[in-house]
Length: 191
Image (cartoon, rainbow, N blue to C red; front, side, top):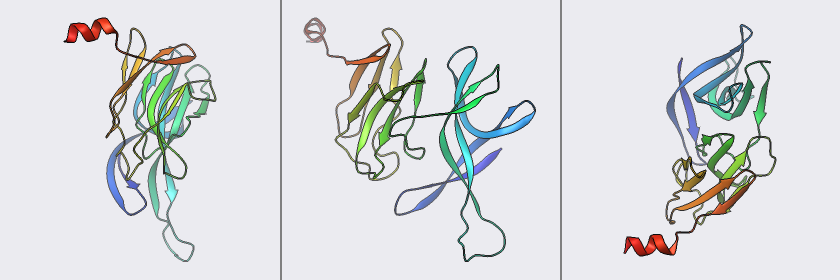
């Protein structure tokens, strides 16, 4: 179904259209989700949750006003039907655009007070992010800091291109992240 999603920052609200699907497990709707699922293994996948929020004021009477909002990410096991929430550090559903590769999530996150932004790489099953680099820019409005990070397969690398900063790339190794520095040989061949 196509729904109108209310996006907002501190000053204003504006509508955006979003395609929502029901997550059906054992013949029953468990959640509503948006976007394409990312296959983590042959048995599990992740997808972003959407939900309806009661937007009625206490003094209002009559019909309840519902608004659709983006939520966090869900990990679903196809075999057991188990649905669990994925914890992503500094993730903001209205601000962060996540790009998945294997069991890693790369995105730009935002602090709770909305004054700091971060480049983040998280791995499923880990509490702390593998990378949490502070960005120079602070978010002025939703989506202002950086576009979706880009992954490369061999070696596993992720590139962030925040606005008002030079792009940077990190190599992801199992449970660690290293900054990628251009070789002298590569620089010499470029000249």
